Each structure stands twice: as C-alpha cells, then as structure tokens.
Amino acid sequence: MSGIQNPLTFAIRRGTTDADETVVIRHAVIAGWTGRDAAAVEHHIKELEALGVARPATVPIFYRVAASRLTTAGAIEVPGNESSGEVEFILVRQGGRLYVGCGSDHTERKVEGYNVTVSKQMCEKPVAPALWAYDEVQPHWDRLVLRSFVCDGSTRTLYQEGPVTAMRAPEELIARYAGAAGLADGSIMFCGTLAAKGGIRPAPRFEFELEDPVRGLRIRHGYDIAVLPVMG
Image 1 (cartoon, rainbow, N blue to C red):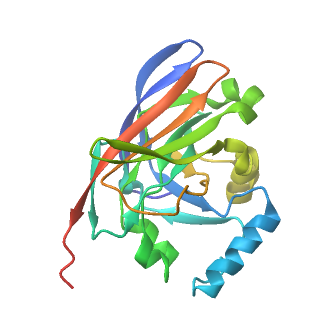
Image 2: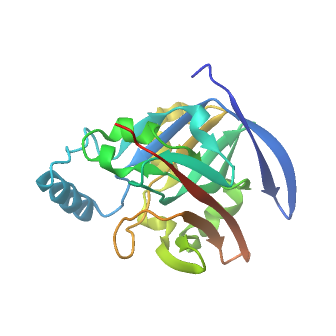
C-alpha cells in the first residue's frame, strides 16, 4: 500500500439517504482490457498491434496510478491537446464495505501509443463526488448504464453509452487483481470503458454519468480541460 494519502469527500448513499464522508485514497489502479467478449478484445488488440501499439502483458491488465492523481475537481490541466476522457465505473473500498461510482480515465493519447503505463500517469483522474453501496445495486447490476458526453461551447454530443456488463463483473476484476484478500480499505479501481462514438477525440469539456434506472438515480460529474503548452 502506497504511503501517499489523498482524502476525497463523497456523498455516499446507503439505503435512501446520502451522507458526506471523506475517503482517504491510498491505492489506485486502472483495469484495462476488461471487455467480456474475449474475441472482440483479441481483435482490437491485433488492430492496435498493426498500428505499433504493444500487446498488453495480460488480459485484463492492471495499471497502478498515483493516488494523488484522483480528483473531484471541476477542471484539470493537461500537457498539449492530445488527451481525452473515457467513462468507467469505479469501485471504492471504505470501512470494510464496497462502493460503486464513476470516473474518467483521462489519458494522454500520443504517449499511450508507445507506453500505456506512462500515459496513465500524465493526467488527473476525475471521479464523481458520489458513491452507492455496491451490495444495494448488485442484484440489478446488469441494468446499470454508463454514459459520457463531449462538450464544446453550447454543443453537447453523446460520446459513449452502454451497460456496465460490457465489462467483466466487479467480483472477477477484484479477484484477478487482489486475490481472495480483495481490495484493501482506501483502494479505488477503474474498471474499463466503452467504445467512443465517432472515434476517440479531445474536447474542452467532458461529462459522464452512471445511471441506475431501477432506482431512478444517477451519479454525474463533468470537468473542463485546460491545455498547457508543450515547449519541447
């Protein structure tokens, strides 16, 4: 467990009430290549190999990221204009209980082409400041939907949309990463994303959400992206 501590405040829903609580994040991991359709995952890996992107060492693969990169802020700063967000459901372990929310694995795409691990460290990882108790949504998990939008001025365009079941189940991802011990308290895991409609592209603002149509609830967040100059 990392010695770095990053306290984030979430509105945590248990039952029908929300309570603000500070979660001290000490360990952050991003799960990649988490799609349930193994044939589709393999096809995409081969497509990327043809473009010079190295095959992942394992499928799925788990990238460590600095805990300090996690943020609930409404804006981030990035180097250059080649980064973009992607919505993911996240798992958070706090007080011995598992919670679910959503975040954006904002990634520098040019660097991703030659070193995925480094690209994951280059940008903040925005997360929505709200969580649900996982055991309260697990019975209808297959009904939950992830969605994201790219925004430019007054234009808001649907960028990603699909069920959480496009990715492997939370229990499987946790077991593959942490074994029988499970996630430790203070851990956060990003759990994979959906294809982008119209292709991966940058935008000045990114918005994302996790919808629970059974309970009529949504977790939403958005952030502006400020581009810093690259001077060589």
